[in-house]
Length: 109
Image (cartoon, rainbow, N blue to C red; front, side):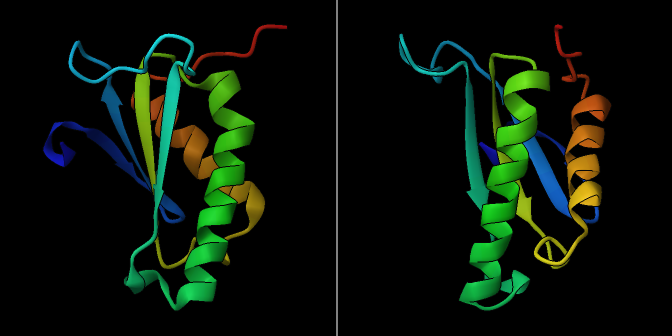
């Protein structure tokens, strides 16, 4: 599946995206956007990996429901700088990835 995804590499994260198809899509009543998080041992010890995942989860919680095009699965991969990257830069990395992959939607309001 990793080969079928589109991705964006930024200093704070790697964003992988896959469009839903007939075989893999959320069931009725599930959210239209699914999220996966990963941090390998290259990122650091368990404490650093957990911090990196928590930061990625919060960034996704703030941005994806509002600005991501529905009908896609997203995987955020932590990088070495994820745990210590300034928060606004980490959010900027995720926004830039969505825009570059053509999945950015302006918030309605």
